[in-house]
Image (cartoon, rainbow, N blue to C red; front, side, top):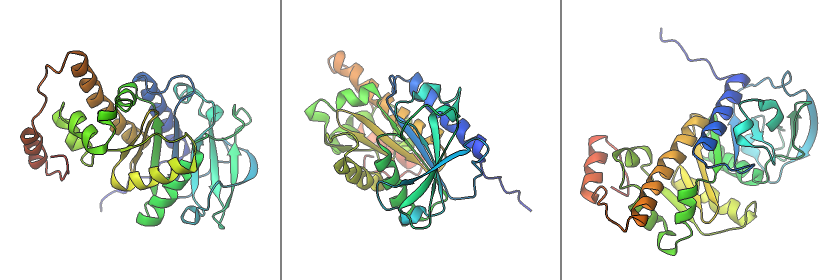
Length: 274
């Protein structure tokens, strides 16, 4: 009889968030208190030991598909690079009530934030949308500010989905395999706004990574925080190569469209960019 892999417990999930925060910092995509992380868990999760303090909160938007689920969310103003050292100080647990409109926020006595991340509305809306549409047991979301991707989004010629993907997916064979849908590019919208929330929900239906022009990215994964961070890192690596080529005066060839297509065919990847 095949063995069933045990579901991650709270310590596993916090360790994954901490490692993801550290990697975001390592690639210079989370300066100071920039960036945020959340996970949505569909199985029973005991948070009382680590997060014994509770208060009821109203959710920023209705989330009926999340009723009974638990979200682990970074706090506003917390540094992602410090999550691994003390996750209780920077993360809160949100247990969504059956009405889908309210929740209980569980925190540690050592928590060092007054509120959850200012992007909580976008995190909540994406979890609600994905859980309602696909009934998945788990999702991780990571917002980061990778410098090369963000820089390219300041250049009008790169600020469309076709233009960006044609440039950043041509530098490594792994790019089209790891990001088959590419990166959806959004225009600049005010951080934390309802406009950005709606556009991001729609963008993450099409791809695993959305670029918020002149701001940063949001990535999702059904596997882990680490996997969402991997997707950001692949996109940022392509953007870094593209930036290097800009600085060098467009001296490099990159992979041709035919070469990208051959990689996708070999690895049985369906991509509009191959």
